[in-house]
Length: 319
Ligand code: ADP
Ligand code: MG
Image (cartoon, rainbow, N blue to C red; front, side, top):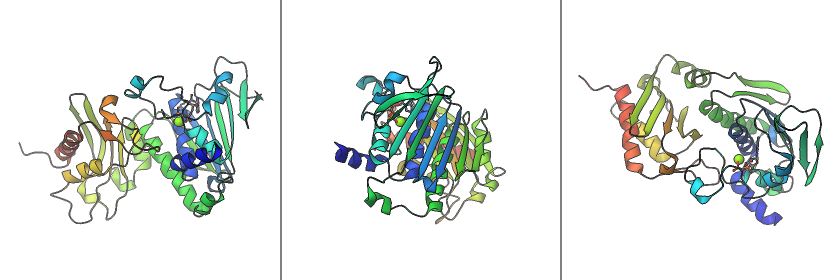
């Protein structure tokens, strides 16, 4: 029912930035290498995300809006090996229950684009292959939620935060943001994480960071860590990704912090951008609808691996 959808939507779609995150992650999953985001009125008035990804075939447009319908996992067994950012099939359904949603899409094979709006599928002429999703009047159906929104500039800042996380993990995707019609962010597609990190991390990070590249069996940790000299008094620029997904995990934050134990005291916080890759069946991202939490099968060993890898770089053992 509509009510159940709205309640479930509350868990995925907290604010405009959640919509942007879900839509851009879908673009990345669709193999797009160019994504453009437009927001108006902090994203409450309008959000538009266009990509040049694989598109949605006409006869799958209405399916894409069904709760728990995903084209990304076909069986429970596959769920163990999921490599896409999405897999729960609830983002579009959730967005539609709290906003006016229009999807326009064209697959490379199709000779034209199709759109779905309020259940009706119609031609959408004049579109290149890819997908364009427009979300208007967010939370107009749920005024209580709308009341919790902060100022436009705060909502804009949340959007930027979400885009930066996705951008760091996907350097081969070019990303542009327009805020009320004005271009406010432009990240060119690059070959390496290093270039993106240089674009997005604080300025002093560039000269005072070291590369991490550690391996243990099928686990690999790469990225950059800031030297203790550029640590901050509060948490800032701490990015930890697991299999391409930004996560907020106390165990992982602690694992990195532990490596600095002897050099950072009190409130001092390191800056870092780290990417952990491990076989998908060793980590469960299906802990929370927003997928920013994960559970590791061997949490203790992962913690140890990360600490040692970081420690070896900032405080190399005397030989
Ligand atoms: P999930 O990402 O978990 O599969 P969503 O609700 O986010 O669920 O999207 C539902 C489905 O719609 C996806 O599985 C995908 O098939 C399709 N889809 C959504 N956005 C795009 C896009 N930008 N390009 C191609 N297909 C898309
Ligand atoms: Mg999705």
